Length: 331
Image (tube, rainbow, N blue to C red; front, side, top):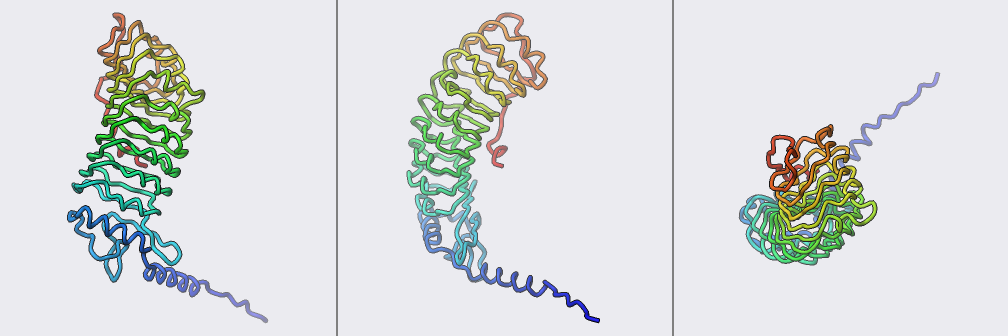
């Protein structure tokens, strides 16, 4: 009688685990990334990053990786794939050496005191998915080279001092889902080319000095196919509300407060199926509101104060100021 011999896989799994551990421990951080992060540390004097000790940002000789630095093993080397150092009062110009971290997928330096422009070399970070620089003191124009970051999904540039126009090149970002540029000093028209972004869910250009009309913004057929949140408030937009606004069928939040728009409200706006918050206040709208607004199953807030509507037009909701944090859209 022959007995079947059953081989255990445990020794193989143990050898594999030890091999992976050996690779992780003995992999060297690529010199390009070590040099870049040490330059950043030296140029900005990041004394507040107290755990940035040692020469290797990925950790070496028993030292842990630097705080806010994420490294990944690729073959025989480790590379830096994320740099997240925020809310630590970093003072100084945007560190150009960051643009040498070519494997970055996430760069988060928000809520610091960075000044000056974003360097055009930012376009080198072709793997970048999230760029968060909000709440700094960055200046000059938004570089068109950001349009070269083909993997970008989240772009947060709010609460800075950027000037000039919104670059049309941002329409070259096929995966962009969230675009925040509110509270800057941007001028000119909102590029209608942004409407070609097939994945854009949230567009916030509020609190700038933008001009133009909504008709210009949505003139491209089939524009903004998945847009849910549109913030145009506190600008200098003029003209009327075009009937084509009803084509934005996924719209949930439409924030148009404090512009210079006029005319009547088209009935189609009341038939956007999941419209939840509509802020029309402090414009020059007139006429009556379509009755469908008052029967809408999802509409929680309709803010109309500061217009020239006919008597009998009533608001809906409790009229609390809508504040949506950037952090609500990070993931």
